[in-house]
Length: 164
Image (cartoon, rainbow, N blue to C red):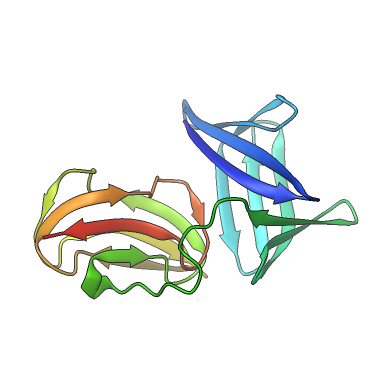
């Protein structure tokens, strides 16, 4: 189960997702549950495939978070818990791998605690109709792994940390 907190109109809300057969079960703050078979973010369109059909939502990323347009209204969300410290800059030389752009994690090749070699594939991120493979910057151990297949991530989100 994965739980993400967002801030919407001065209130923290939690979005919970968990694997469910071929897709995901999403639990909204009002405890309603929805099945999601597939999610894809391309350009500024979020496409959600459910058992009853497909839904497309326009979204825009802002420095404060994400704005989603739905049925003529704009919903503004910001992360309730930051993905990284304000002003902190990480580099793969430190062993911290971040999302270079917003996208969808399509494959995770390693597990937390696993020993990796320099250049080994860690995960694949799909963004703007291209796939980018993130690789280990040096030999070490996967100390932190915050990437899940099928997860949408924002630019700068910490995905993995490798320690020597």
